[in-house]
Length: 290
Ligand SMILES: Nc1ncnc2c1ncn2[C@@H]1O[C@H](COP(=O)(O)OP(=O)(O)O)[C@@H](O)[C@H]1O
Ligand SMILES: [Mg+2]
View 1 (tube, rainbow, N blue to C red):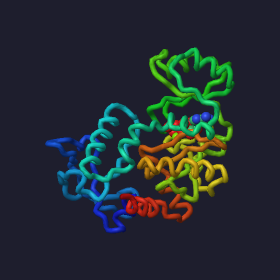
View 2 (cartoon, protein in one colour):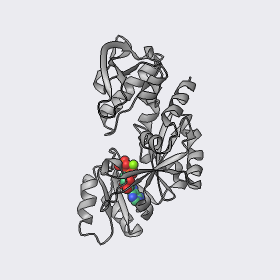
View 3 (cartoon, helix red, strand yellow):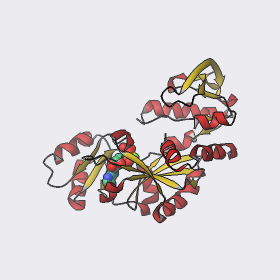
View 4 (cartoon, rainbow, N blue to C red):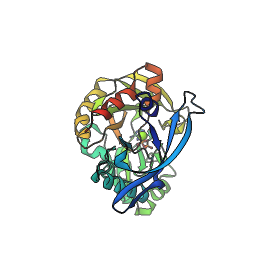
């Protein structure tokens, strides 16, 4: 993304969350200019640091990974204030604050498998008895962290439910296990509401059921299926209208499991394996946005 921006003549400035601040009615950041190198190991050079209000950048891209904690939310408040002073921020801070990556499937329930969101251990237990093969996961993390597969006869079943729900103090998602995960968790990318023509199948490594690159999954670019198109075409315009310029859908088998909006990945693997210029498509969409 940064290389594509540099190629189009933009200067690339970077900062982390801590550099964002509000003073005398303006949201500003102490940002550092970098230039991108072609070497993937030694990939940038640092240049000057400058304090600037965010509206003085052509665009601000928020790419903070979860945890979705209070600091994450505070950053979106600051970025929303920056938008009110005229900054162009993507994904739209109001939208990423409103939009939990796992809970978001509830809006598109016709594309999901049976799913429960609850903090009551008894209700989660009843769901396991009913669905027989279930995944339980936390709502605020990513990368396959705290994802448990559990069946009714699992000797650790009660401990898993107690631990993940902190004995009823934390809301979690329980979902019917989708066996097609063996063919990969498919990342379907939407840019400006339009589908990138290839998905990235993240195939779990042997002995692992999580299809996250962070959990060692292998990324293989594949053509989109008819179902991917159906889901993408239904969600694309709805999400784009909210200022969600870049969205990474997770689809396992025929089912939508996640709508990633904080810092979706997959550009590099798709671009390297297919030659399709995903970053160029993103820059085109960014330049089209008001
Ligand atoms: N319903 C499900 N059926 C089968 N596997 C699942 C299911 N939900 C999650 N998983 C597994 O867990 C991984 C991570 O789940 P996901 O919901 O995408 O959360 P995150 O990527 O934020 O950790 C998936 O790649 C998949 O391997
Ligand atoms: Mg995921």
